[in-house]
Structures are given as C-alpha cells and as structure tokens.
Amino acid sequence: MNDWIYSDKVKQHFLEPKNWLMGEENQFDFNARGLVGNVVCGDQMLMLLKIEDDVIVDVRWKTYGCASAIASTSVLSEIVKGKTLDEALAVSPEEIAENLGGLPKHKFHCSVLGDQALTKAIEDYRGDQK
Amino acid sequence: MRRIYLDNNATTPLSENARRSMRAIIELFGNASSMHKDGRLARQAIEKARANVAALIGAEPSEIIFNSGGSEANNTVFNILAERDFGNRNEIIVSAIEHPCVLASAQKLEKKGWKVWHAPVDEKGKLRISEFNKVLNEKTALVSVMLANNEIGTVQDIAKITQLAQKAGALMHTDAVQAVSKIAVDVKDLAVDYLTMSAHKIYGPKGAGALFVRTGAPFLPLIVGGHQENGRRAGTDSTLGVVGFGLAAKMAKNMIEKYQKIAKLRDELQRQILKKIPFTTVNGDGSLPNTLNVSFAGAEGESILLALDEVGVEVSTGSACASGDGKPSHVLMAIKADPELAHGSIRFSFGLDNDMKDVNYVMRVLPEIVWKLRAISTVKIGDKNE
Ligand SMILES: Cc1ncc(COP(=O)(O)O)c(C=O)c1O
Image 1: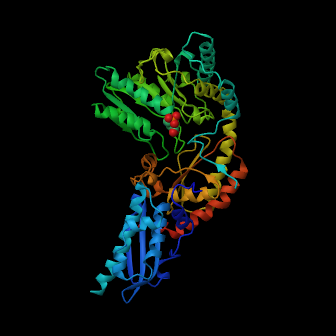
Image 2: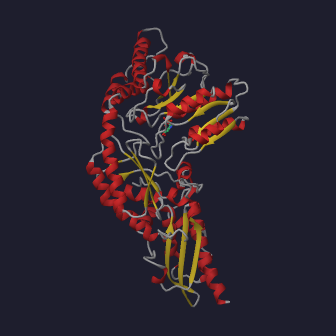
Image 3: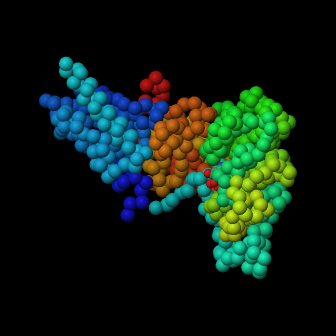
C-alpha cells in the first residue's frame, strides 16, 4: 500500500537519490554546467554533465528544494546517462514526471525545472564548442 | 516504528475525557431545539458545555456562540463589518501575521471598498505598536490581532492593543485559537469584543469551535435561517462536537501548568538544535510554551519534514512549497524577510503527551537529515553571496 504523499518512485529517489554530487563542483570532471531556479522561489538545480563524442557519459547534480525537486533531478540523471545530446534535449518534463510515477499538478514545475537545468547544461556545452 | 507527534499546533488528538463524554452522548440524537424530552436532553448537554467553554475564558455563557471552528468564527467577525453600517469608519487593521482565514476575510472587505492596514511586526513577531498607532485612527472600525501565532508562537500584548483600539473607538477581535489552554486567556483582562476559539487545538473534536461576543458588541450572523444560538448562528446544534468541546474546555482549565513543563522540553530541543546543527536560527520569541520554529539554512522545509516523517517524527513546515506558488510563509517573511530562511523552516509543536525521550530521539535523527539535505543542496551555507 502506498500511503505516501507522492508516488513510490518519488519517495525512492528522494530518500536515496542517485548521482548527486558530494562536495564541491571540483569533485567532478564535467564539461557542461546548467544552474536554474533560485532559492527565493524555493527550488534551485545544478546539472553537471561529462560529455564525450556528443554522448553524456556521466552526470552529477545538486538540488535545493522539496522532495519532488530532488527526485526530479535524481531520476533525470538516470534518464540521460548514455544518451546523445540530441536525445537528451528531446527529454520532456512530462517524461521526467512519468518516470517518477507522476507528479501532482502543483509539483509539476519541479520536472520543468529539471528539464531546464539539463537544457541549459547542453546549451552551455554547445556554446563553448562554437 | 515509534511515532513522535510534534504537530500539535495543526491539531491535537482527542483526549480520553473528551472521547468518553462524546461516547456517552452518541445515542443522544434529539434536536436540541425540540421541546420534547430527547430535545431537552440534548439542550442540557449543550448548555453544560457552554458553561465550561465560557468559564475557560472568563465569559458569560450567553457570550459564547458555538460554531464549526476557528475559521468560521474569524469569518463571522469580518462578516459583521460587511453587513452593517459603520458610518465613517471604513478601515480595518490586522497584523501582518494573522491566520490565512483572517487575512482572506479582510481581503474580501478590501474588495468591497474597505481600507485594510497590515500592521507590521518586529523580527520576533511582536506587533510594532508605534507603527500600529500610525494607522489607528477615527476611521478604524475593527482591529484584529491574534493572541498567539500558530507558526512561530509569538504572543501579543492584546490587553494593551485593545486599550489603544478602543480609545480610538474601534472594535477589537483576537484569534485565540492557539493561545487557549496554553497560556492564561481571560476576556475580562483582554477586554476584547470578540475572541475566537477552536476545539481541536485543545484536545477536543475537529469541526467545533466558538466565537465569544461581548454582551452589547455589534453582531450579525454569518449563517442565517435558524434561531439556534439565539439567532446568532443557524443550523441544528452539533451535540457531539459541542459536548466534546465542552469537556475539552473543562480539562483545559488546568493545563497551563502542564504546558509550563512542556516548555522545558521545547527549550531543551531548541538548545540542542542550536548547539548541534550549525547555521540554524530560531523564529519567534518562544512565548507560546509548546512551539519551536527553526530555520535551517541550505535545506528546504518540506524535504526535512518528509525525511523526519520517514523515521517517525511528525512536524510541519511554514514554507508553502506544498502549495506550489513558490511563496514562502507570510509569517516568516514578515519577521525575517529572507526567503531562504523562510523556505527552510520547521515547526515543532509539542503536546501534553511528549517527553524527554521524544526530544532525544529527534536529536538522534535530525542532524543527519539536515546534513544530507545540505550536502545535496546547491546552496552554500554561510555564503550569502551565492
Ligand atoms: C491561529 C489559528 N486561527 C484559526 C485556525 C482555524 O481553526 P479551525 O481549524 O478550527 O477552523 C487555526 C487552525 O488552523 C489557527 O491556528
């Protein structure tokens, strides 16, 4: 029985988040960085990607925010690992929410923010390449 | 798993005494307005409860109007203004940290053309009397300031505020939902015209409450179409709720000393949190004996709440992440004006069943939870420029 406030998937990713960055940013060898949101609104997400030959080979993230925000970045880090940049850009907030077993309407902005962090990191990388 | 309930400002469990009183009358189905015996029995039970509720706050029984709770009582007071002619008086003063049901009631009047002042509070949540005096004038019809705040537990000097309000010719209301049973509340000392109470914050049932209306104070019912409560609140009396409320009020008469002991637990939790968890600040002045509101920099309130819940500790957060509008608690913003501290706040509200073991258990689990959320967080604590 699930008597939790959000889905079991959100619970799992909240209680045992995957791929989060322990310590400072210099603890991870990345070449793409996306930071979105702000503390004033209650959610901030940082996505760090290690990209090789247009493929995301590794991911780390940090999130300040509620359980759904933490779970969104955690599940997103699993979704995009191994994807090409174009595949990763095609990931939608809906897909993130789906992978979490759904998010309530008032928490959907968490998956939107996760998506934005990812997009920003990829744009950051592509900008540097040009 | 052991469950530790530290959310008594949200609601309290039904006390054994209240439960027993309700069980005893559950078969008492008569309509208290009926003249026959079943009706009279219900009436008797209700009037006994009214005497207990009145005695709790030093009122006359005739000054107590039973209703569905604090929200209704607060709405009722503001509705009097909407419905009645107050001549040149078309201004209202509320404190900036009132319960949403007061703020929303005031807003309704604002839309009808009333001028509403939100009197500011200081960093501990105390009304700034000098600022209050600036907006209090001969046009003020009503002043509504809560006795004790539900989020941070700050208690206001209502007797003094009433004196100022009444000198200006205004009516005075106080929402005493969180204060009753925890600190001394006497309508003669406070001298207010209206006072709001709720049963489920004093170990009574949910959906029952009362509005005290001083004899002679202007009144108009919010719910019309029945002669109940002397024509002041229509609707067949909720015998069950009222009886439970009455018993809870009777028991609450002797609770102040018990809450003094509870304050020691609260103080100990505060001491340990401040000692063992860096970058934490206490919100409020601690004047309500059971309430501790703490901001943890770099960690978000709902996450702390849910992680605590996983290990059996039930608390609440003032942050409104749950409501999705991204706006932090208006109370914390009024005292701190720092969204990060407001988002990272947790309210521990003790009840009479808590003991030192609960405090020790919280301190076994809380530091690690905050540590982990801070480690995951983008916010670098201690670095305000980030
Ligand atoms: C200060 C205050 N006023 C009013 C209310 C509303 O009371 P009720 O739940 O009985 O409607 C509450 C409880 O949430 C409260 O804490």
